[in-house]
Structure formats: C-alpha cells, structure tokens
Length: 179
Ligand code: CTP
Ligand code: MG
Image (cartoon, rainbow, N blue to C red; front, side, top):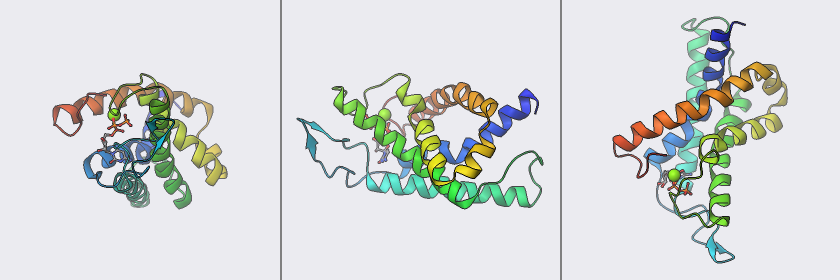
C-alpha cells in the first residue's frame, strides 16, 4: 500500500471509533454512568459520562460501520478499503466509549474536575479502548486490518483530527471546552 492508501485506510477503519464520542456529546445527558457515586472522595466517573451518551455513541459508531459496509458493497468507495465485521463494528464503537470512560476514571483519580484537560489521554483514550476491545472481541478481523503501518497512521492522525473536530464542536457551542 502507498502512504496515501495507508492514511485513507486508517481514517476509514477509525470512522466507527471517531463518531461515538461526538454522538455522545450531541445526544448525551441524563443519568450518569456512576449514578453519582464516589470513590475515595471523588466521583467515580463524573456527570460527563452518561448512559444515554454511551448508548448513543455505541449505536452511532455501529450504524456508521454498517453504512460504510453498504457504501463498499455498492462500489462507492475504492476497492482497497475493507469492510467491517459486525462484531468488529460493535467492538470499535464500544471500545471508543469505554476508553473515554477510562480516561474520565483516571482524571477523577488524579484530581481533575469534569471538563479538565488531560493532554495526550484526551486525544488517544478512545483509540486505545477501541484497539483493546476489538482485539479481544474480533481478533481475526482486527489483526488482519490493523497492520503496523495502519496503527502508526492512526496514532499520528487521530490527535490531529481530534483537536480539529473538538475545536469545531466548541465553536458551534456543542462542547464547553475546546478539547
Ligand atoms: N457525554 C455523555 N456521555 C458520555 C460521554 C460524553 O453524556 N459517555 C456528554 C456529556 O454531556 C459531556 C460531554 O458529552 O459533558 C462532553 O464529553 P467529554 O468531553 O468526554 O466529557 P467532560 O464533560 O469533559 O468530562 P470528563 O472530564 O470526564 O472528560
Ligand atoms: Mg471533556
């Protein structure tokens, strides 16, 4: 694969991972995942992680993967782009949401209030979550698609895309902070 192809494959494969957290921001709210409970004097996750946001995120990521599969089946995209096993589609979206919650867990343990930035973690938490959950739930598909060059492309591109989309969401008034 050329470098350009590798970059395009990386973005394509990560679309079901990028969408969940944005869907959670737009559609989230309501009961927090930790039900308001604390651990050692701080919230377990905080009010920023809700059941509705998590469910909407997983649903949106999975639905997007199904759409991408349909686009590929119709021949709307180049042949070198892979399709998503349904189990992998679910795992990518679920992993993204769990990774984001894992980051909030770490933020609360390190004294960071809801919305406080955690440079590095904020940009890659959902990628690590998606990789881990997909490697466990759909290992055959995962290790076939995420070759070393694709993983490197994902790790380089994701922070750039994340910073850009969050800035846009902030300017649109969807997020309270630009990170
Ligand atoms: N959101 C949600 N459920 C999730 C993730 C996000 O409802 N599982 C919504 C919340 O309204 C949240 C907003 O999206 O405030 C922004 O998400 P994020 O930046 O991840 O949360 P923060 O509020 O910054 O909280 P934290 O410090 O825990 O990251
Ligand atoms: Mg935040």
